[in-house]
Length: 227
Ligand SMILES: Nc1ncnc2c1ncn2[C@@H]1O[C@H](COP(=O)(O)OP(=O)(O)OP(=O)(O)O)[C@@H](O)[C@H]1O
Ligand SMILES: [Mg+2]
View 1: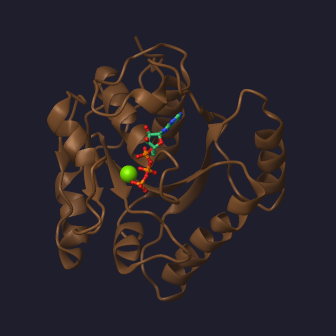
View 2: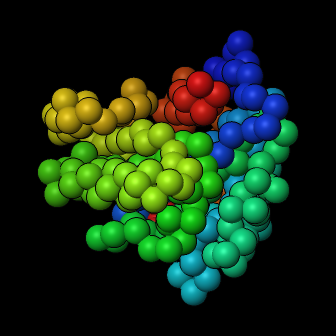
């Protein structure tokens, strides 16, 4: 079912993982699949949809969770000033809270800062194109800013998404980013548009396929969060 064996042990107080990245880079799709995999593997997992109210368009994680069983609850975005308290409240004991965020444009909005200052790990979803590369720098700059003002800040890892079958662009991006000191996850989420692929999975119950990219990412992220 999943390859999360032996199970990863998450510390009792739980861990929080925010997903950030440009619109359409697969954040919500990944979180839906992670929730399903983590819960199936015995890791209690919940999610918070922290798209700013008003950004909430069709295609949100919250609506997906209304339509299909994601294995764990998805909570709506609280008021920005309450985000940090809510992040702690929604984190399952010994488990994981995944936080979905709105599109990261040229720079982070206040909601992004509120979320980043309240999580342990930030995952930047990044398609491996040259145009996207400086987005990693902009996320890092936001995290540096939190550090400068003495706020809590998360560790940043990059997840290459929407990769093509020919791995060349992803390999080049991986080399450039790791060469630049970034941590890039080993697991990549490929673009899969076929009928039962990730691109058509919105609103459906995520499939648990052992050894699939989503399964491997669930394992890698659980380990990263537990570290
Ligand atoms: N691996 C994939 N392969 C093919 N299509 C994908 C993949 N991941 C996501 N998609 C599709 O791309 C679109 C955007 O995905 P998704 O909503 O997960 O991105 P997002 O980062 O959450 O976007 P937003 O910032 O707008 O909320 C959706 O139509 C989704 O079905
Ligand atoms: Mg989304």
